[in-house]
Image (cartoon, rainbow, N blue to C red; front, side, top):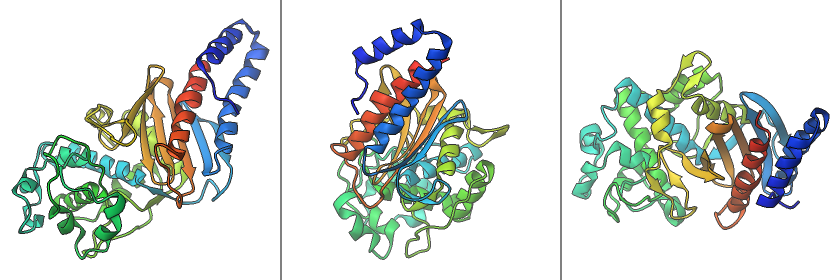
Length: 340
């Protein structure tokens, strides 16, 4: 199916304005259906669910598990852990985003680590600017087969100054998880269940643990599509779930401020969220291996989830690029065309 280009978008918008009310309803229905048709044509895509102003606009499963079943969210887990980091900051368990590893977890910094490791800030970890050699990509298996994942990560060489380059690394989020467990005195699973699962009314099952029993920060979690949507809606609503505040407005706002930029996708990155724009409209996106996506668009009161085959890669020059075109050239323009 051809994607919307600027000429077609403008001409359809003019036609929409000129149509009587009965025809306008038909145009809107067809526009939303174009999202479904384009997503269905991507053979890695399993499902798409879209909410507008908290109400379901579309929910389609093309292949894979039913929509009410748990699905692996892969590195969307990082965005979940970033939210837990926000709760810890809001509660004062983390004194400041500028708190250093030397202040937060001096007992976990191994002998032989580069002296700069102690100066890495909590913010450096959340924005993946720790400066340590990456564990994601080719080095991932070697890291997760080591005897101590935190120690292995902190003993890696410094390849950049902390706070400079974005170095996408699951180890950064695993260290965040270890810090959260240390300052709270409980496991990352318990924190996830009580600080997010309970207010969101979603189930969070246990997931992979390291040899020391720490839950993996930044990968291997599972949620239902509904759980993913509720999480995205919480951010879209400024940290609120109904009348319950889960995250501070400050944390939600700061999460959407570009701190660095991905060298792979070119997207900016805040606190656990990739940040982009389509036709002047900003969005925040959580991304997981294979093409797992949570995205919210505040200006359009829009939140949507895309699930995909978790066994196949989704590179920026491949399937993830297809998803970005779906988001930027179809979903956001259609939502803008159907604004009240």
